Image 1 (cartoon, helix red, strand yellow):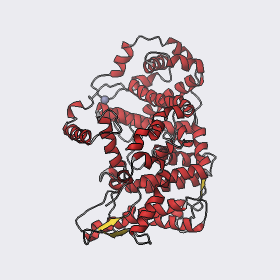
Image 2: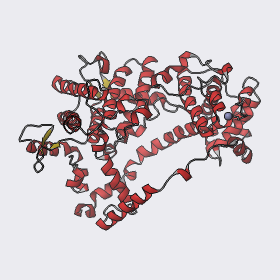
Image 3: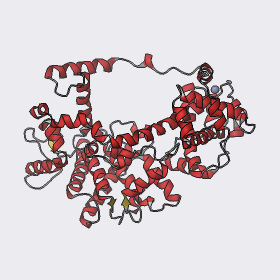
Image 4: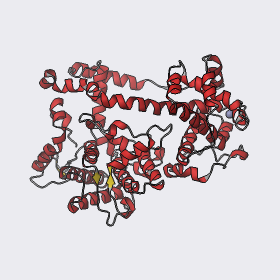
Length: 518
Ligand SMILES: [Zn+2]
């Protein structure tokens, strides 16, 4: 059994004492264990059953992130763990800030999950795990490793640390038995006791690293966080062993199910189905539960996304009569001869994604050969992308990433070059953003320029055997990626400036008299 603080304390009290929760629970656990902290205790009322003492790992994860932000550096000892942490591991938060600065303003990014607000989170923003997830993410690890090869070798040590924490989080947050297959990452496998199970072995080694780190006195986490992480990892391993070895009727154990996230998510659904009412009655709660159960019975089959049967890009483009000539005049002056290696590496990664998403929507096997490499329907255009452009792709690949064909790569790269030139010119970008349908204006301008440039013209006319043209869909999908990054840039500044205003509702809720009475 796992007792979460949400049920024991009123919400306002919990939020105010968020940082002291570990202290409170340590005292509680110590009392339950008669002074010496253990992973489990005997159940007071049910003989032969156990209570496992676990600190919510989401809170631990947030604490690890917050202390990385505050202390600015982490230095776990690497003795006997060179394969996990490298020969030496001096992780610095400055490296992550530098990574963001290196990519700020770029049309496509390697570390696309990194947000500006996550690098300087406010006190209230730190209570959300979103910022920790944005820093401890796959894309940040790949970004750090990529720039480590491009003149910033010190980034590699930070990459190792970020990867280490992220792997622990992956193991501790598995909520579905099939996640490892979907994500092609063995660390998402549900916990099973066995000599060669990778998750259990990794968790045991992580526990040892944390213990040695705490003893070493090197720059690191606070004693409370060390204790909470070691206790939680140990208790989760004991719980897995208990379920599998002692009860012998459990195949695997989903560690994410014992975190407070599912409980908080359920309470969030109750509140939202009552019109965002924070202080709801028992009757409202029961009605909300009924509503959620009814909704879960509805099938989504009839609402699934329609398969693209015609050429939507063509239709959209011809139906839109917005003036694009001004943008075409600007775009045709753009030089497309110089290609930056980093930009091209990101384009290989993104164009593979675009090719795969178009193929999945169209469900045409012939298009697959035209868009994704490795299918020899169109042998002439495969395998012509230089190997040096595939570095990021190889780093991020766990076996099933789609590699683009040269056609798909070339169209996306052209779109990136044109959009980068547009976003570098403030007036042109402003004019584009003032259009009713920016994507179609950009597409039409690009079609005009490409059809009038002899060396690119063939890109527009590559068809699959079923006569599908993919040029428009590739440009539209690429534009969606550019627009997303541009929007993040636009939002980053106001979010920092208006943080107090944005959190006004939260602050009012935490300090209101009504919440004090709950
Ligand atoms: Zn096709």
